[in-house]
Every structure is written in C-alpha cells, then in structure tokens.
Length: 362
Ligand code: XIL
Image (cartoon, rainbow, N blue to C red; front, side):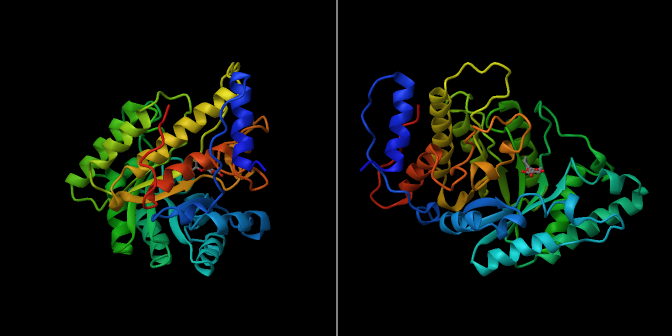
C-alpha cells in the first residue's frame, strides 16, 4: 500500500520526466511540532478558531500562533485612540487553553496608522505612539512571549529604509528605536523582533536590513530577535536563502522564520514552467530554508512559522490572481500534507538523535 508521500512524489516525478523514477522511501506523516525542540508556528484569525478542520490540523501539527491581522493597528486602534482586543484576546485564550505560544504581530508597520496619527500635532503624535505601543504590549504581558515590534522597515527595492508617517518620531532610526524601547518598558521579558520579507531573495534588501540591525544593537536598542518572513521566491538561485540565514546569524540573536509560504505562481503573465518544475523548485527552496534554520545554533532557533495552516487559509489563495491551484503551504485544503510538508519534516528530523545530517538540496 503506497502512502500519501510516495503517491505525491512519484506522480510529480513521473510528470517531470515522463518516466518511472525510484520511489523515495516512504515516510509517515508525523506532527511537525514533535520533530524539533523549537516552536512550529502558524498564523491564525479569530474566525478560524470556530472551524473544526482548522483547529484539528493546527492542534495536531503546531504549537505557536501568530495573529494574522487582528493584533495589528488596523484592528486594535479605534478612531478615538482607544484600543479593542476582542479578536486577538480570543486567539490568545485559545492558545492558552491548548498550551500554544503566541507571537505578537505587529506593533508598528509603515502601512498602518496614517489616518489616525496623521491628524495629530507633533507632541500628541509622540505621546499617542508611546501610548499605543505601551497599551498593546502591556495588555498581553506574560501572555505573548514575543513581538514583531517593527514590521517591514526596508523598501521593496532594498537600498533604504521606508519613509512613512512614523518619520515624525525624531532621532537616529527614529520610530524604530523608540518602538523597541517603549515595548521593552512595557514588558521586560518579551523577545522583541524586527521582521521583514524578501531578505533572502533580494541581497540588497537583506544587507540594508542587517545594517539596521547592527545600528540598533550598537545603539543599545533592545532588539531581541530577527524575523525573516520567508514568503519564498521559488525561482531564487540555490544558496541565497542559506547565505542570508548565515549572515543574519552573525548577531547571535534568535531568528524567527516567521511567515513561510512558497507560491507555485510567479505572477508573470506567461509562466512556462510545468507543474512538476514548479513543485521541484518549491521543494528545493523550502528544503533549503528549513535546513538553513536547522544549521543555526539551538539558541538562535526561535521558531519556524507557516503563513497559513492549509492552502485555502493562505492569503495567496485569496489573491485575485489565484488560479485555485496554488499550494503555497504545508497542507492542502483538506489538511492533507503537500509535498512541501515532507521537505520541512525531513529537515526537522535532523533534530532527532541518530538522524541523517542533511538532505541534499538541488
Ligand atoms: C497579511 C495577512 O495575511 C492578510 O490577511 C492581511 O489582510 C494583510 O497582511 N507580511 C506581514 C503580514 O508581516 O502581516 C502580512 O499578512 C503578509 C506580509
């Protein structure tokens, strides 16, 4: 009887080369959280807590949650600058009921807050900035173990920090440094992260991000971790992911691979790659990411988090360009393992005593 993994991979290999290929050794579908000593996370919304298919898969595979959007300013900050927490409180309560950790996401983001803060005079602006960061972090003190304090500080092109309404906060690295300092005052123990995307696929952006980390560390800003979102470009050259992970590790800080997905689509009008080629690329890059994380010292393996429990939970499947066939995360719409699940599980198994050192990456 062939198990799911064998059927999945052999059908793909047949598709790729049109000929039979050796069937890989069958491997059981085991809970990712049982394979490794660090948390395996997934993003969550309050609505998903009510959906049995989601809770069954999440409770079997994962042990940390990241609120996908309801802990962000767009949800928590009211027009009168009061705060609402009903939805994120439900996520935190679910996590505590089931002994899951919670990673707070995200306090300050260039893309949110302009409408509310834009109308404020400078002195009130700073006061409300401090009050917001303090209010949210203090509300979750001892319930949220870590925070994305500043999200996506570097431009897409990668050579500079983004400009935004937050630039009204004075001082070197202005709002970024202040947000970390205010968050630290509100919770002396939370691990405070700087989080961004395309750091591995855009070397310029990765370098700008790490120079920012270096400045913050040198200035005594309480940055406690580096968040590598890892919305992977599966056509990126082999080795870029590993190379950035090694560069990021140089600070000795915990690293959160924080928002993993690996779309089979590349957004181009004509994508001439076969499904098998896209799947091969995805397995290679997801495997490279997971193995690069496994290569980190244990003290720097903060967590490995996926941006969607099932393909249909991924925002990539809510995108208007979605063709209904993308498989960006580890489990399909029915909660069955995608090929990418096996790439991650194979890498995580390296944490098991006596397991093989490393799966060769193409
Ligand atoms: C996205 C969520 O998935 C969407 O549901 C929401 O509408 C917008 O934000 N980087 C981040 C995440 O840090 O917060 C983003 O999540 C994806 C990109």
